[in-house]
Structures are given as C-alpha cells and as structure tokens.
Amino acid sequence: MKAVQVNGYGDVDQLEVVERPIPAPKKGDVLIKVKACAINNTEIWMREGAYGAGEKSGWRPEGVTFPRIPGSDITGEVVETGEGVDQSILGKAVVLFPFTSSGEAGLEHISDDMSFIGSEYDGGYAEYVVWPPELCFDMPLPDFTESAVFSVSGLTAWHMVEQIQPNKEETILVTGANGGVGSLNVQIAANVHGAKVIALVGDLALTDQLKALGATHVLSYKSDSLVDDILAVNGGPVDSVLDVVGDALFETSLTVLKKGGKFCISGSSGGQMTQLDFRTLYLKHITAYGSVLGTVAEFKQLLQAVAKGQVKPVIDRSFDLKDARDAQLYFKEKGKLGKVVLIP
Image (cartoon, rainbow, N blue to C red):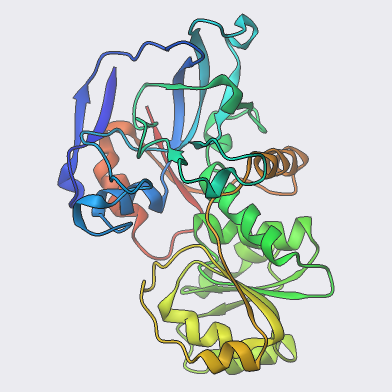
C-alpha cells in the first residue's frame, strides 16, 4: 500500500511517501480501506516534538517510535476481519474513534495508557489501517470526506462545550473560530446548546460563513480595542471562553469573563507559555478547564448531532495523500475556514 510516514522529529521533510505491506488484522481487529483522513494539529505537533521535551514527545511518556504513519481523523470501509470478529461488520462504512484506553467509561481520555492512532499506532496517512471494531462507528453522513472531519476536532470541541455546560441565556467567546476545533465549538455551543456565540478570527471576510454556522457576532482578534469590542457587542462580560489559541488571547479572555465565568482551553497555537496574575482567577471566581479529546459516549453524542444536521462538516480543502507535506504546510496557514483532508 501507499503510505506517508514520519521518520523522526522535525520539519515536513520528515514526511516520506513509501510503499508498505498492507497490515494484517490481528485477533480482535479489522482492516479498513481508508477513504479520507483529515489533518489535525496533533500529528503536526507530534512530528515537531511540541508535546514533550525533544525525543520524548508523543501522547505517551516514552515518546513516539519511528517511523510512524500519522493521521487520526479516519473514515473507510471494513474489508477484512481478524480472528474472533463478527463478520457482519464487513463492508461497513465507518468512522474511527481515535484512541484506545483501559479507562472506565467516562474516563477513557484521562487514562494513563491512552494510546493514539497516528502516534502510538500507525494511522490514516495510508491506504489501509488496522483498528478494533468496537472503536469503529457508523458514519454520520453518507460522504466519506465529510464524515472524516469530526473525530479529533469534533470530539475535542464536544468535550470542551460539555465542560462549560452553556445554556441559551449565556454568551460564549470562541477563539480560533475558523479552525477545525473552533468552527465546531461555534456550532456545538450555538446549535446544540442554544448559546450566543462571539467568534474571534483574524479575517472578517469570514463573517458571513461563521454566522451561517451559528455565530451571533464575529470580531477580529487583530483589533486594537478587542476587549472593548467584545464587551460592547455583548453588553457586558461573557459567561465562558472556549480557547484554542493560548498566550496570544489569554489576558483578553480572562479580562472579558464575568465573575464566576468559565475558561476552557484545548490548544495553544498562539503560544504555549503565558503569565498569569492569580488574583485574576480568585477575585473573579473563574473556573479553568484543560481539555483535549473526550469519551466514547461523547463521540456517540457528537455523531448523532452530525446526523441530525446540528453540526455540519466545514472543509477548506482536500489534498492527495502523496501531497501530505504540502497539506501540512497549508494547514498551518492563517485565514482558512474548517478542515484540511487527505484523500488516498
């Protein structure tokens, strides 16, 4: 099969198009012919070593074993079963839950042995992938590409919104609202929970598209009066912040939060280190959540919301698998709306 593997930590020159044997499903696994694989920050930061110190970067403390095929947002067709697997799954179009874990239900994402497809297992930058059938779910939409954009970003966004539990009386500030997680945060907060959403982006040319996704207001983080802009459109402080940016908007986020507000972060594309005056937290009674991925139950809820049309796929561009380097470079450019997808 054709695959793209990461040979070590570093730049996109570590991505190599290779020919590999089609993996054989072991006992209790299935073989999936990959139809689409969306790109996430996860595989880029894994390659860059951003999740840890040097050679220990990865989802597990021991780091990544190279070469590794990345990719975690995967849809495909089950074409072969391993020993002990019910044959009725053959031929099914599936979307993959992106990690294994021995954690009990509701705590899978914080188990110490959580292992990620594309980091601890070979992933979807390939024509075939092996995965447990109990972590393969019916696609929420009939199209493989559209169904491939929800696994990691969607699960992360769903769990973030679950953390803050918004209601239709509240206003939620969403940073990075044009990205994979951010655009889903907008939809889940607005269309599933009924909250008002202020979407922060760099380019206000995206305003109409974000309002179509559910945003009440769209503002540019480049504004010299961003705090005043947010307070003005909302008529006062916001109830919660869903953040994927980190340092660049951290001070703004805490400033515009009401007393008793909630701050939930799942990414740090705008800086991984920040300065914090603890008085801001305790004098305003702010609750802070660190959040990434989520549970199997939340994944099922997400897929149901997609099937109902409450959450829609937002795709910026697709690339051929062989152009994975170009796709990852494009993914890091600013001004996109939604996901970037690889097609084998």
